[in-house]
Length: 325
Image (cartoon, rainbow, N blue to C red; front, side, top):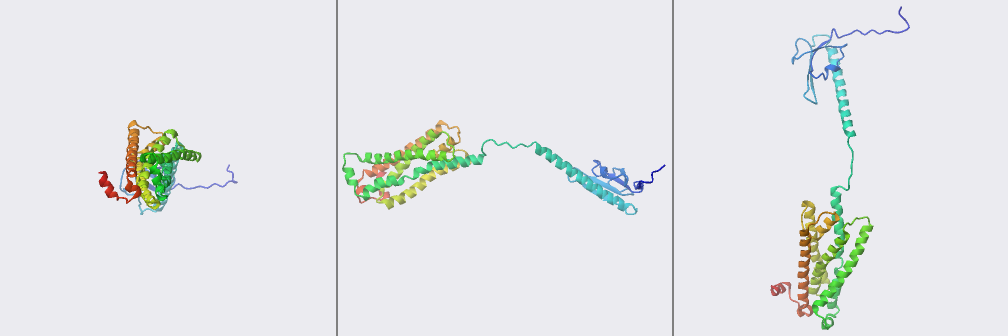
């Protein structure tokens, strides 16, 4: 007995009428064709043999599918529609598989942060090193006022008449400025550390800064002894400090780009990065500071011993060089 309260829909199978030869070794599209709509016959042929042929070439992604349609049969449109639907289903399936594999790979990725990135470390080292060296060039007015001021105020004669050698006058004035710079460097380093910057090996860095200040003060004294007035000394100090900054900064830039070089600023950068410092690096740096200090102070004392430099008429630079050589 049949229950007449339910509707029964009967769909005829078209597979016996719509026939398609398929050359798809990997079954990319073949497996997606509905056998109730199109009857699939697997073949190795690469050209149609009397009926429609689907040729799938897949050596990877993307794959190439070619449909040779037999338009002489009324079922050709059905074959075409089903093949297009199978291609869409296959594309969606492949896309889903790719997305799933990407999600599995992303699940194994972990972000681990250990310390600072290399560029950030370099920026911090260079910036802190320059900040530490900066005060060395802010005390030139003390030397200028101490030496050139004696000429401007006409008190140099009475100072020279005192029972003290001229070399002691220059060295005493320079030493006073170095002591002031040493005290202010301590204050400056405390301010930098209080601002959040980390300064490892602070005592050794402080020693290098003080030793670097010695030739800088000596060079400033040399310019001040030769200058007639404040204006001339200020112009001379400006050009001289540009050269000094170049000698400090250029080797540091070479060290940043090539990882090698010698100089006070490079030594400070290595100490800031807690890098290993060889004895040769320290000896070369300190030797350069000592030699430059001897040269600058020696020239300053030599000029200060000359009466024509103090009282005039002052000889030119070329004449002084010829007399020195």
